[in-house]
Image (tube, rainbow, N blue to C red; front, side, top):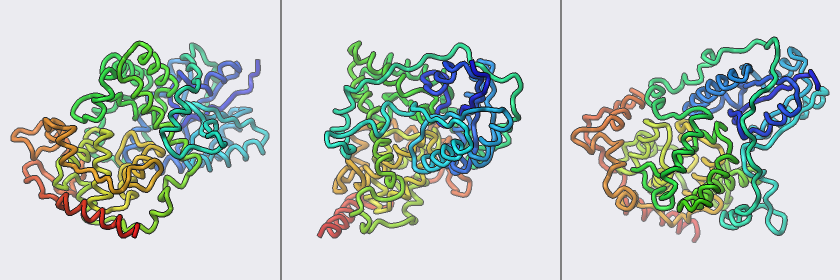
Length: 470
């Protein structure tokens, strides 16, 4: 049994179970040094995801302590930090779980090459996805550009069982020095909004596992019909946990399979949504430009507006369209937004207001605690019409019509919009405690008039689309 330590570089895999890297380290018998690095790529996260990441790191550190391990925190360039830790600990290898966004790929490729050049074992593991993006191919050996064939191809592909929680892991007798998490001030940019959003965060591996169990014990049965109704708890709400790796995707998948085999009606639909997450990563790997520019280059000439005063009203949840405003206010109060509401808010910005999807993408990247680079890019380009497997641009969601269909009792709108109730509820009022004071918003103000007439906005969008295709 080797006594030469392994450095385990954790990033978005902050869990002990369903953890291929950790399982391989345990099997090796070598002592491990768990590390989390606040590098420039991580520093670049938006306000809400960076704050939520700090909560995940804190919970993971406590979980490691239960195994007699210490999570070493260091700040700086990843390669520099890792080289320093190799020198301090005598480690012979650095292992990590793969990430797939362009910035992480560039960083990890450079780190692996440099460490191998130093004579240090550098090894990456799967763990964030069910299938590695390059393992799913069309019959011609290419990648999938449309979801339905992708789903048909992967639906029957085997997914290995998740590894159990380790009962014992070897650590060091003397640990290297570590930063203090509170000194990083990961939540600084959240300002006063942090105390509001904190109430809705379900942090850590045990909590994520309990959330999954509760979903499969109840809401999954009506998932197919209720997943689009934002006024009820009809979804798993696991997005925040999956994005930080607080629960493994294989664990979620196999739990969904068991629910399907037990006859729970919505389980198949739930599995399909997990595959949609996979598809977004499949596309980000093969076409990384999806995160920064139009996936369909023919949309580069479309006359979307850049940032503008109407988009600012969208950001502030004061468009005068209740379904759109409720969606934005839900994000400020809870840190997340119901998927149907994301579609409506995104369609309104890109079509009724003819504002570039990048404006919305960047704002969500700053405000969502469940921000995910692939899902955010895929979602915005889908609703804007510029992406793969997208909603046609001429499909313009009518917020009022969508509200009648998916929020018929106005429960969702009243929940988050104080101006619609004589006696607003606590969440509607919490919006005013979460947003910047500089916005000058107060619950006793009248509800704003609409930014644009819905029919006129739709007509303008279709006219712009028609001119583009003329």
